[in-house]
Image (cartoon, rainbow, N blue to C red; front, side):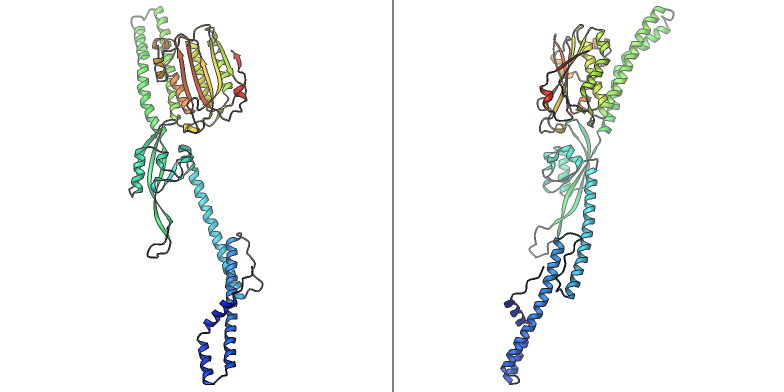
Length: 501
């Protein structure tokens, strides 16, 4: 790039200003007769021309250095723009210094960018949600864990739009106004209740000064007070504490009756019935039933405890529902045949897999089909119907149930033709140890925990359990599970295929 020359008029005026002290001297010499007028005029013009030439050379050199520096600032990191061939030695020295400065600044910029990228990656990879809140309680930053918990819309909005806990919002406001750090606990009720320990800490950062002050102070930076929220999930800890208390309470309540029976029979066998072989045979059979019931009860309690412990952590695997149902129905075929019950599976073609844990979903299907076999009438059908449903239609919407478009759901409905259940009992069927007919349930080997286990597994899978029943007609238990992929539409319109076991 060749620098433009200075305009002639400006150049002459600049030279005249530089020679302003010399021109009166020439005028005085002419007046004294020391020099003639022609010599005085020629001397003045020569002085102005020489100074103008020197100014032109210096301006050219300055513009050459400025243009070279501008090219360095706008150009690539490694390439160095060439200097004009006519560039002087001082210009080349200044340009070389600018190149060195440019390379040093580039190296420092790359280092700063690398450190910034590493910091961003570390913050994004944190397992715990982290939220940075600025003035007016606006969310300035949220890492991946926080966005997964509250949704992407948390950014650039009031924290209260995503986190509506009054205690947390009050703590944030207090710290923003200059208060000390705070630690408190709160719970998020949906999609599954989770407990968090939140730390609210002040964060001081430097932000650009918006404008010069009235005193003309140079623009710099001013302190900006912000708040960092870090959330630690303590659901497992709190549930462990609660489960220990619940296990003791439930076990002591449910085990009291069979234990009392066992102790009574043992006392009888060691006392009055010591020599009565017929009583031995009868009492030992009852004792075996009671011991088996206690074993089933303990197994169900332990299973329920494990499920509740992980309920807040959604599964990440995929499960073929039809494959699991085929296995469950094959395993229960003999049990159904003993009561002359026919097992039928109805399912469309092209059914997508669901997001879930294979073992837990197998347990859900086994509990529902086994219950249907127990409570349906003899010589009737138990039908398992699989279909596709919209999440909005069943009250499940968006990822993690936080709004948005309804996700595709796979519905598994287990229908029996039993006596049915009165409407007043339906809301309580999934409670622990709740039985519509306690005597009949115990006689059939039930522990009262099966539907509670089903409910907690479905909650963990971010699904839904619905129960429909009519007295004298039968009951339908339907489980809705989120599909692992978008439905192609082919399976929805396909004619259901019927399979009988």
